[in-house]
Image 1 (cartoon, rainbow, N blue to C red):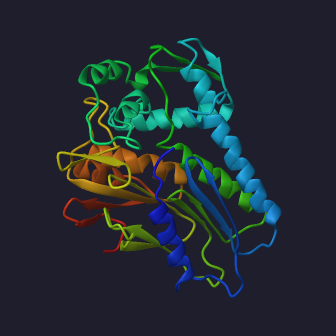
Image 2: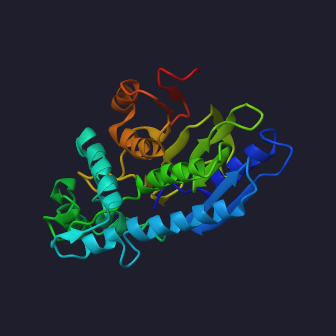
Length: 325
């Protein structure tokens, strides 16, 4: 999926262990690799390791439901149906409908059908070359969330070449489901980290807030540029400094413009969203980056229970109205 950063995870761990410790007793922790990244779940007010096991099982379940690369997942089956209708799980429908609402909200600046274009860039293995222009134009013809048709629990893609990728929202949804599961099992103090998608449950057992560090863009040591104090909120960052390729001394990052197939060039390094919904934070971090500083900030200031920090390419921090400077 997306928005992963080992540096960010280590930075968060350092923040928690040095000066942010929540109890005299060590929390119970489970860490593993899922969603192509390191995930970590920390519980501060329970010793029931079976609850942690349940969290990992839920993560595996959702990866097998939402991943476009896991054969047999709902998204995989939709993408490989050659335009035929596919019946999927109700949660897949719910997540698709939410994702499509952000596509509409951003007037297509956020689009969940960019997968073929992203594959052409191959940011993980790209050694410094542009995609073939003819291939890029062909892939752009298949981009367009409007091709996705939902009827009850059935999904059909009008253009057989269109591919869905929920990487810009799925981890947020999964984090919200983990929070529900933990609360149902009596957990009131916990921290969920799905590869940089952070969600806190309650505050620390001593009553104080969690202190979540936001990485300074392109800093190899993962130095924090600022921190966010939070209780019962999610903190998600989309930035250009983790997945990119450098060509002719210019950075080309993974947040692509659906209209051109090239990265957005809008003088932003990152957008961090703080919200009581991790699904919202995940989707809005990419949406606001795609919309740019002015429009993205205007959107955030119009929403309840949602704040943002924009970092510009000269390292200026721009805060939404509800955050103290």
